[in-house]
Image 1: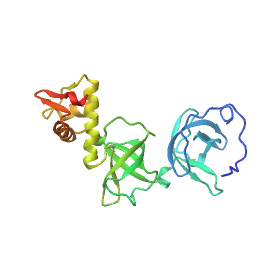
Image 2 (image 1 turned 60 degrees about the vertical axis):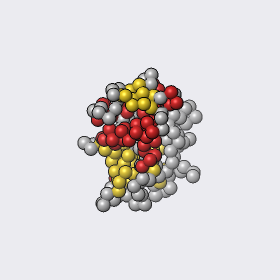
Image 3 (image 1 turned 90 degrees about the horizontal axis):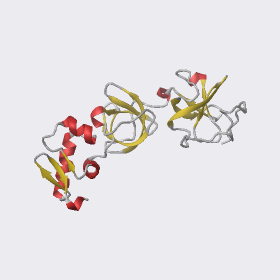
Image 4 (image 1 turned 45 degrees about the vertical axis):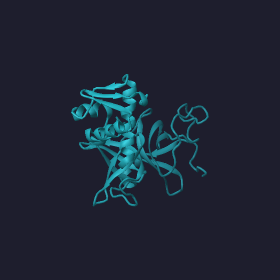
Length: 237
């Protein structure tokens, strides 16, 4: 697409030929966490991994960002067909999802922290929630990760998970247990009687998922069960 914007002033922050791009390449229709590289009389310009910086007009800003800060935006085309950014995500991201079902793999962009957990943008189109109990690792604002639809509520809102459903979920947890065992010399002081908080802190999973996973690993003879924990079997090295 030809960018019909007037050329911007040639400053150190805005000369495309003088600056090495650090941002991953983003496209129109995506939600992304982008760095402000300059601020002019018409708005802020963002690094989106393209040859020309992306304009965030003043009218699409929620606050006045400064150079070096990152902002969560939706990239769209204006009436002239030019790519621009907006911080007003509610105009583009719907509360109720369409075309998704429990178990579907989706792309998540982490947005805001809430009392329940983390709010995320699903497939750049819908809002969803990752509850604290379903967080298997720390996540930061703007991070893009693969997730799964845990539940579609009656009102169309999405509950999300970082782990796949069913048997695949247990396989992921099992691999995490084996990795932790190898990193700790082959033994973990965790078992059926361990506190749920201790398991969550060490492995990032619920006690129920942990118990099911070690049961599967034991049946496959990859671990042995001891009174105070679990040990990597010789075949699990």
